[in-house]
Length: 415
Image 1 (cartoon, rainbow, N blue to C red):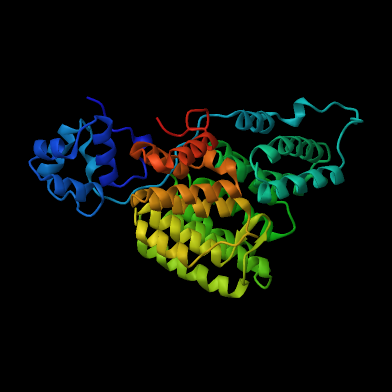
Image 2: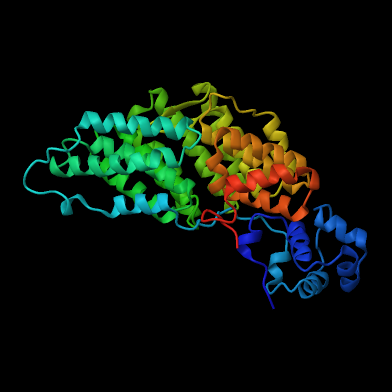
């Protein structure tokens, strides 16, 4: 017997898993309902998440009919939203080669005439950071530049025993971590985050070490190490208490609360998640609008987006849409955050069966950052639901979105 593909159904409610499995076998609701001994209307309510599977006998029978090997896939429980790592792409391979290429193998005893100065590296890194924040091709455009930044700043730091290039390398590793996490290369993301912590230990500003620790917590959020993520995130701000009077410290503390809240919600520990969200809101009142420090952003919109993501993790689609209505993201926000806002909205609409709303939200995400559709697992899941339903009125729009997401290509996260 075939088992439900976990990668293809991860993040879906039980009702949507049942519907997807039924459609895979080409069975009507009436046929499945009759085989289970229930009514067609009952199955419709289950698939639309208006009724729960609350009988062990029915769950076992439904698992048998739909050829689900593990009946636990049909039990309602909090869904862990840990996106699977995407297939290795050319961009990831380039970064991996750079990360693993140690400068000791490249440096000779003589100074290289073609070596970049610290000023050259800083200018190139600034271009990478601007591209990541605002370019439509925010993955491919900065990544190849970032390879040079990492290689040259690491070489400079190595040759000068850390006297030059170290701070640039920390910034480069922070940006590299964000890019790798976005592309699903979570192991490499953890590696570069850990390297940044090692370097930041020698920085005169404690807030740099705190920010580096938070980068590692962000990387761990996308792995199974949720407790470690929570603990690192809550610890990070305490490392910079001597900078507590600075606005950047409040921002960092608020961002740390949000990372820890996501980890707590995924454990799941809803009480701890709510406590952390309340603490983050308190920090946001002091910080004001969206701001960033050392590449870490925080503000009211980040709190709203975090609440949306946590609600999506519970498959509470109504709450996602309700929170989104109160957290409209401005055009001056980073492109990736705008795209993520619309992708989470699309996932909620798709989960509610609102194909038009889902397609529109995905189109809005593509306006902000087309490449986010390629790498975001929630965008892929929403598109698969749209493809399964086959709404003829949306056929052309969905086809365009599928092409942008490269669902049949190397970035696909599904089976």
